[in-house]
Amino acid sequence: MARIEIDEQRCKGCGLCTIICPKQLIILCSKVNNLGYTVAVFDPSAINCTGCTLCAEICPDVAIKVFK
Amino acid sequence: MQQVFKRPLSLKDVQTHFCPGCHHGTVHRMVAKALDEYDLQKRTIGVASIGCSVFLYSYFDIDVIESPHGRAPAVATGVKRAKPDSFVFTYQGDGDLAAIGTGEIIHAANRGENISVIFVNNTTYGMTGGQMAPTTLLGQRTSTSPYGRSLENEGAPIRVTELLTNLEGVSFAARVAVNNAKNLMDAKKQIKKAFRYQVEKKGFSFVEVLAACPTNWGMTPIKANERVGTELSDYFKLGVFKNVANL
Figure 1 (cartoon, chains in turn brown, green):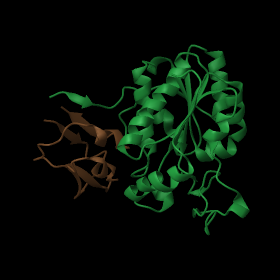
Figure 2: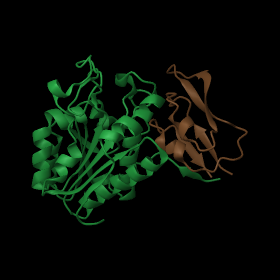
Figure 3: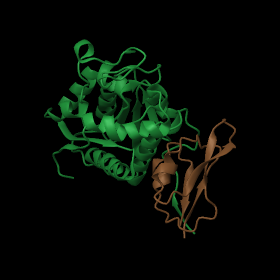
Figure 4: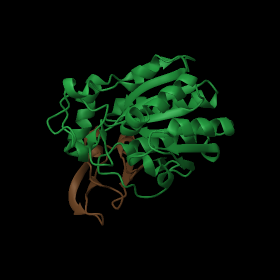
């Protein structure tokens, strides 16, 4: 089982991670960070994250950490 | 549980000024990762250009020289010749490299300087307000081509990688993109390979990265990311154009 951590204060809500995740485990939520962007969140109940790191690879703000 | 993906050492832990969905951040991270993999951080001198790519010195934990508009390959030539043991790369946008710095890039490439050039092509002048660049696609609306770029008035977009491939001095030339999983993996590989050319003193290496500029294209980040895979990749074909040492 793997999981990711998204740094909410670094996320600019571009949504690139949401389209690249093969399991669609990341969504943009209505939460707004200090910069005024609606941030991406990882589904905390997700058990099928494979830790493929694609979300972190595409993230332009290096806001994602992947644990496996 | 172990952390399998972390920020590269060569990249400072700071917030960037890039707009949401701008691929500059992704390319920055890839370049930093390649520097880490060859353990180059301590002996690297980056040469920044003008445009959104200018803040290299704020984001990379390496020595950086800021060069005048378009002159990065000329500055890099001087640095490399004065300090041949250092690792020297330039990071330039298309307004910088393909317009103002056309002369510098062609001659540095033709001399076969042992430097690496990362060329981020987003078909517009990003920082100054989205003016038309030499790489702007036909029909693309920009702030200086409000009716779209036309073949009669402005000519066709320049394919820089193909242009440089024809020069004897170029050892490695590739065009990559960072818009989907496959392209991301390939981009990582080619940037690493370009750096290996310099590490092994095999001559001039050049990587063009197709990138999105959602703000100046007037698109959402996701739509802009899509455009890289469609319109941009149709005109600017991805692939390795030259690899003389077969690395």
